[in-house]
Image 1 (cartoon, helix red, strand yellow):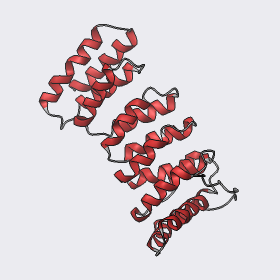
Image 2: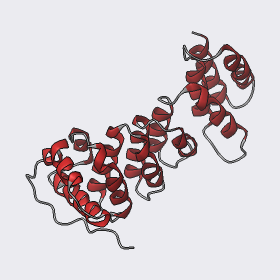
Image 3: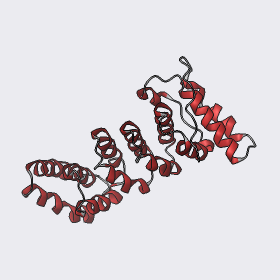
Image 4: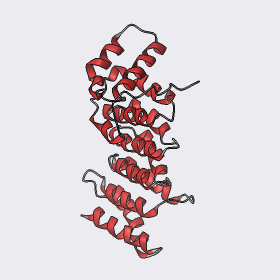
Length: 231
């Protein structure tokens, strides 16, 4: 199916047009699903037409939960070249804090534009979904440093008990990965106050082993991770 065209930019349009009440009115109308998707997408398009760079998108108000599913579908249908609109929609989905936004955000992790991938990786840190954990761990191997940093930041927001197995699985895989970043995340997870002692005891030896052998950068990361894990 075809994506929606970005439309022309109208300088001066206010991002506040996407206030919760505005989207709620759209979502409450008695419309079929296709019409609702179109109207939500048009609302988002109008709301971000005045944005001049991606960093302004975080100033958009929150999204009403009733419009979440149509907006997630609209995100997947928007023309991939519409970078400002995509970034604004990604950040809006993240700001809902709703796990239903996770599949759409995970899909955008494969976008060809590194800025969009980084925005999706960052937004997933605000969405409580363990389904995003695996894709975020894979994003630690992204070619772009900003995407890797955003993925690491979002993984730090994940529950430690669920994060540790995912990190350990990635550690054992032969495909290229930033082992230093993995070790730092393992150290962060092991340092969680609510982590069960048996989980800490099971994973701590990996850090000790990594600190004693391998490339110096990996050893240095392991030492830093140990400092986080045992304090």
